Image (cartoon, rainbow, N blue to C red):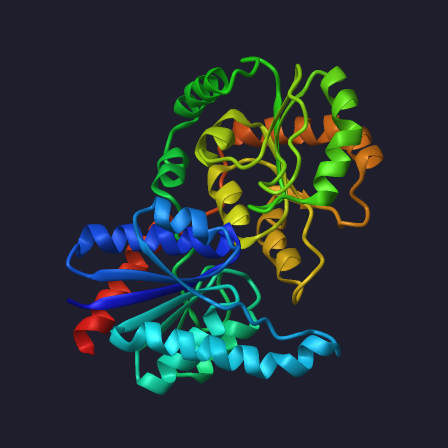
Length: 356
């Protein structure tokens, strides 16, 4: 029985695309053993077992970005992570990486063992882990066009793909259905706010100070605060929740999205044609700003910096944003990102296993 390892950990942006591919692979080849590598504390600890796949945990050993005591203990911790990864992958026939702290040791372990590597780069700007994957002899699969690398898109959940394929009239019926199921007013313009799978303190503070004004202006808000944050009290025009399990329902109910600019979020809002205000997270190598521009440059939203985004700005601009959002939705325009990324990647996996 062939064994394929998936390395994707930390946030839903790393885990959900891996799960989408794993489900597709399982459907195409139920004889293949699928295993996920993850780290303790990441969303994979909930999402992967719930999806029915085996999760193997390794110690998280991120490289310190500044000089501190962790810099001197990092080599020992990383060697431990490598030992764990090599042990787990002893029976691997192929590794595919989707990002997170577990990806780098997985790539190094695969190279040492001669295991074929596929690496999916979700962001418009390639990260360090996937640069390592290429150096280890891996094949890079990109979500967004860049140079001569192969573009496959972001693997999306089947429910999101199905929503993206509805006609305008079908989407309007789905909107009513979704609002009814979420106990929202059927006619009120709706704003969906989320800061990623872990939530966002910045977003939570902004919405906390702006919510009453926004509600009084005739809008309602769906707000994902993050699983580790205190959930505010629900009230008329305001629906807070820890984590949105049925993301397609929240999207269907919404006219406007306010979010970070992770690759999955940008792709989902892009293919669904939902006008979005992107507030890129100002960390990493600036990939979120570049992701957001892929959509905003084609009229699907706009960008504001994390520093500028606050309650006062939101209150002053929310009516303008909603007018743009409703006008955009009437055009039925959506970003032309691939909807068959999972199928494309599974095809690469199967070809690699056959040639191997």
